[in-house]
Amino acid sequence: MSHSFFLQGRVFSRSLESTGSLQFAINSFTQNPKTAALVKALVKEGALEQLRRCFSSRMVFGTAGLRAAMGPGVSCMNDLTIIQTTQGFCGYLEQCFPDLKERGVVIGYDARAHPASGGSSKRFASLAAAAFTSRGVPVHLFSDITPTPFVPFAVSHLGLCAGVMVTASHNPKEDNGYKVYWDNGAQIVPPHDKGIAQAIEENLEPWPQAWDTEEALSSPLLKDPYQDIHKQYFKAIQQHCHHRDINKSSEVKIVHTSVHGVGHTFVQAAFKAFDLRPPFAVEEQKDPDPEFPTVKYPNPEEGKGVLVQTILLKGSDAFSLRPPALPPLCSGQWRVFTGNELGALLGWWMFRCWKKQNPEPAAVKSVYMLASTVSSKILRAIALKEGFHFEETLTGFKWMGNRAKELLKNGKSVLFAFEEAIGYMCSPCVLDKDGVSAAAIAGEMTSYLAAEDISLSQQLTSIYEEYGYHITKNSYFICHDQEVIRSLFQRLRNHGDQKDSYPSECGGFSVTSVRDLTTGHDSSQPDNKAVLPTSSSSQMITFSFSNGGVATLRTSGTEPKIKYYTELCAAPGNSDVEQLQKELDNLVDALVEHFFEPEKNKLQPKPE
Image (tube, rainbow, N blue to C red; front, side):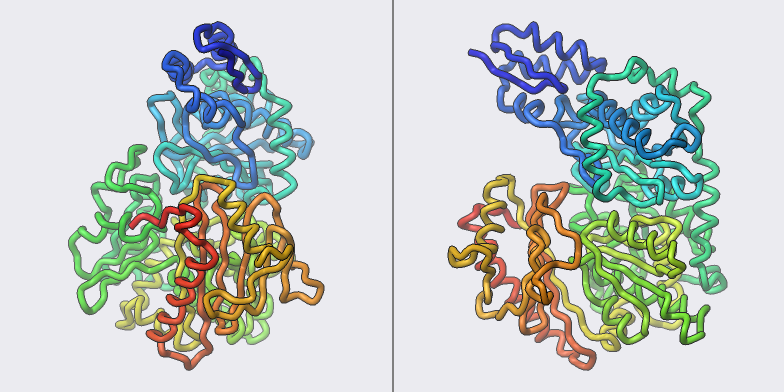
């Protein structure tokens, strides 16, 4: 019985009994014995389905770079796919930057590791460095684990052509990723993703020195930017420290957890830069650990499930500032702020601090704040009243970072950008989400409010009272079947079996407009064409309702999820929160029943 596999860039046909050609392919391409051993074991076991998953299709390089499980095969993150990706990226950079060999690139990494396949973020970073230096490209390779914001900061600070961060962010422990920054300090956007993907396909054969990490690490082209970037970053974020005296004297106790990631050391340093009392660390979670032993998912979006250890840490007046934050309520219960609520607080704070320093009425005309289209519209409400500009972008900090760069080049001030998935850009020195600076700024905000005897919950209520309540409810369903996902969205586009006809109501809630950023349709525009960029490779439809509700359905770019984001925006003065919440709950129930149809589509709800 014969089977074919796309093995590391070549097709091999083989029988289960004869593994000669397969082993030849492994040995001729892969020099990591652990990865090769895993493949040989799968062959010996006759594990056809697993082999197909590993070798049938290559990871797709997109604007988010790569993100996949570590393991053998072209569909996984391993030594060989890292080499191939870096060779392609290097080749593309050579086309785009004639001065690449003068300016160079920066590479950072986190603490993820997969002992079974021999892969780790540090090893992947070293292999990437070897590929670049073998072509004469200078590489600034961090000598130790770093937070992701250090890479885009280094690109801008050192004037480099590009940056690579090896990290899977909040994905499961088995995963890793390859995140790419352009010379403007922001993540790549089209058409660079397609150009890099094409260059990868043209550079699958490892270059002669691609595996030689020892030579790369001793190359004169290699530099360690760690000390310089560490010093300059914490110097740069101090421009956002406005209440140093209050910080020094504050008695507020703050708890920080890095959830086994790399954040502990750097958040401590950020608090020191602001003269804040060092935050208490959650001892069980403060050190980097690729096993993430105390959490099911290392994702702060999962709320209390991730923050159990933080809540257990003693101290009734403690605040967790590794978003989401948990201020204690009068009842003694902890409140987990959503990403949108933290966005409201930080947005209010950033504008307040700016206004204190810029009292001239005309100055506000050059001020901007940004948020992704699936995030709360609270910044829009604040902007309308205060006179600054608010802009929406597509989902992802790649869009906000690039738009911020455009505005900055035109002499505008970008005070703040956020995404509901707990990502905050509080400083233009990093054109990406940055939890390190956000933690310190949130610490100062908390200390200031405490000095005024105001809690974070009270301040959030004040913001909603002044600018209008914005009640949100976001969640997701898990679905591994791409055909089910495609069918679900196509049914919404062809409602009632009529082509290009969207639902006019949902469970009694009247739909007033529909924006489909997959097809480019927007019924709220005179020409029915969406203003925001569209992409046929991902699904995203937004429904606006007559009661002021907004609901967006979209697929995740990195996980097998169909997400939904809902919000009810009330005018200032409408403070019946209980009624607003009830109305939004009813809208979400209707959305789930009529648009998602979870039983029919066999969708798994978000785990509790």
